[in-house]
Image (tube, rainbow, N blue to C red):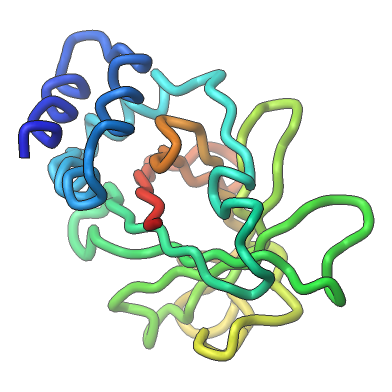
Length: 199
């Protein structure tokens, strides 16, 4: 797991060299990438989000363009919560029937152990071209879902009103497979997360 240790050494450095970090993630196996992010402390994630400022993330990075509509792409995640730090964000492209004319979008939800209490946390993702970031918007709900995904419910339902309601996440690029995000509810929250796309 040499690449895992290299990645951890890079993110623990006094100054994160994003080009070297991207190369290390690109050289790593899928298992090494996930192994590395499992070692990312809240402090590392906060520093990484700042270091990734200006590094353009796009929907094409989140779900490769050749992916069929409603075919899920899974991202394994690590957040900065005190507990339940492992989760997945699952994304898919819209079907032709529901693809908006004025923008490209992805549908998605949060796959995690507390979903029975909080709800699945559905969202619509789109590019913020000006900021160069991907926006994960829980204020919008998708009109459709893959058959294997849970029922779409309002983010005001259950305890989701305290978690997802009114929230927006913003993603910045780390490497081809890795993004770093931060949550916002009107203003930045003390909540960060890192995602690794499965291939």
